[in-house]
Every structure is written in C-alpha cells, then in structure tokens.
Length: 260
Ligand SMILES: Cc1cc2nc3c(=O)[nH]c(=O)nc-3n(C[C@H](O)[C@H](O)[C@H](O)COP(=O)(O)O)c2cc1C
Ligand code: SF4
Ligand code: SF4
Image (cartoon, rainbow, N blue to C red; front, top):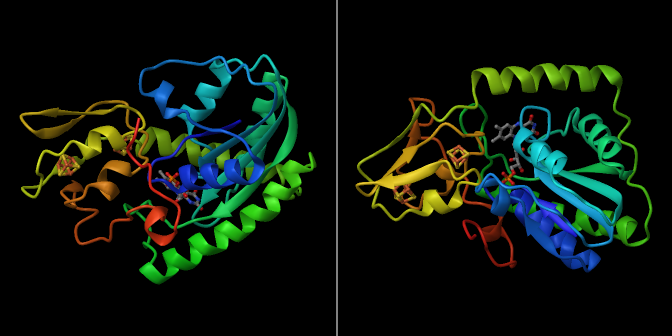
C-alpha cells in the first residue's frame, strides 16, 4: 500500500507511479486529513509513504496522521520524499516514526520534482519541469526494483547535525510562515471552487462565490498554483510569478489533482 500527501501533485504523481511499478494501491491521506480523521490500515505487508519536503522536513500534518493512524498488519516501511533540491533531514524524522510505529525502517529516497514554493524560490521553466518529471520517472524504476525485491533503499548518509538543523528550520517555518492570512483573491476569480477541492487540509470554503481561507494552512501551495485563472495572490510576494500546474501536463499519466 502506498500512502501519500500532496499539495500540487508531485507526490501524488510519484505515489501513483510507484504503486503501478510495485503492484500496490495508492491512497491519498488527504481523504482523512481534510475531515480531521485517522485511519486503520489493515492491509498486511509493506507500506510506502510519499510526501513533499517542507522546509527540510516531511509535512507535519502527514507525520501526525501516520502517528495517529494504525497499521496492525504491517511490517516494513519505505519513505519517498519529493523535493525541488534536497530532502535534507527527512530520513531522521522517518526513522523516528518507523521506530514509534514498530515498522521495520527500509530507508528514505528522494525524487527531485519541479519547485512549487513560489513565495520564496525561483520557479522552474517549462523545459526544466519536463526534464525533471522525465528524470523522476526513470529514478522511480530503480527504487521500485529495490522495493519489489524487499531490499533496503540506499543510505543517504545523513549526518546527525543535518537532522538537528532540519528540526530548527522546520520549527521556524511553522512558526513564521505556514499561515493563510496573506492569501487573497483577485477580480479574475470565477468562483469555480477548484481551490476548495485542491486544498489537502480542507482549509478553503466559498462564500458569495469567493474563496475564504481558514486557519489550517500548511502552505502546500495548491490553491495559489492550481487556480485555473491564476486569481490567487499571497500578499505582494507572488505578483507576476509563474504558477506551477503540476506534473501531469509533462507526462502521459492522467491527472487526479483536486479529486476526493
Ligand atoms: C512550504 C514548502 C517548503 C518547501 N521546502 C523545500 C525544501 O526544504 N527543500 C526542497 O528541496 N524543496 C522544498 N519545497 C519544494 C517541494 O518539496 C516540491 O516542489 C515538492 O515536490 C512538492 O510536492 P507536491 O506537489 O506533492 O506538493 C518546498 C515546498 C513548499 C510548498
Ligand atoms: S480556483 Fe481560482 S477561480 Fe476558482 S474559486 Fe478558487 S480562486 Fe476562484
Ligand atoms: S490553504 Fe492553500 S496553501 Fe494552505 S493548505 Fe490549503 S491549498 Fe495549501
């Protein structure tokens, strides 16, 4: 079973690909997270968890979901992080969770995918997005082979200080940045509600045909990137910045973004 959390679709795409290659099923954790629910996963055998890197660490909301859910039949856990550059301290977080949950830790791999954090980073060009998605697909084949053979993923050689610095970076990120306060809608909004269904936290609702943001934002950037009219801004930080429309337009795989 592959369980994923995704904002703009990169991790969903990777989860679906890896599920296909390992003959597993993919499950979107947002189906539970949106409703504030946890789950009992009774499928026996290995679990593969896929998520984006947020400020050097896995998304807190996804780690909390795994901690609170139950996996009575499981024995092994693999972790795959999608990131624009580096997964940093993620293996340390996952090793701890694997220990807490009684999983046999089988390693953490990183897959580089297009950047989606338009607030602070340069967005990839179309060409870079296409190259990144194509490279990801071939890297996944090697990872899937290891998983199919029940082997551990290669040790990324993370140092203790990398985990400690990731803890500090991610702590500051949740304290200072992960807020929806600065989101606003422009006159281009057509009230289509796509942002509502794209939000993996269920943090957006429509009022008088316009989105209103709540207090449960994890800064996944789905609403601002995926709006079909590019009608969402984040203060002045995102004016005239490119929006990332997800990996499916760079691949032959079909899109499921925003479904529930
Ligand atoms: C809040 C936030 C923080 C991020 N931090 C990092 C980071 O520390 N390192 C990195 O390489 N990419 C970082 N990224 C980029 C994403 O990890 C990357 O684009 C990911 O594939 C997005 O996955 P998704 O489409 O499944 O949401 C960040 C993105 C966001 C939205
Ligand atoms: S997705 Fe864009 S156009 Fe549609 S309701 Fe949300 S902000 Fe408006
Ligand atoms: S409000 Fe927007 S940025 Fe925040 S969690 Fe929802 S979709 Fe992601």
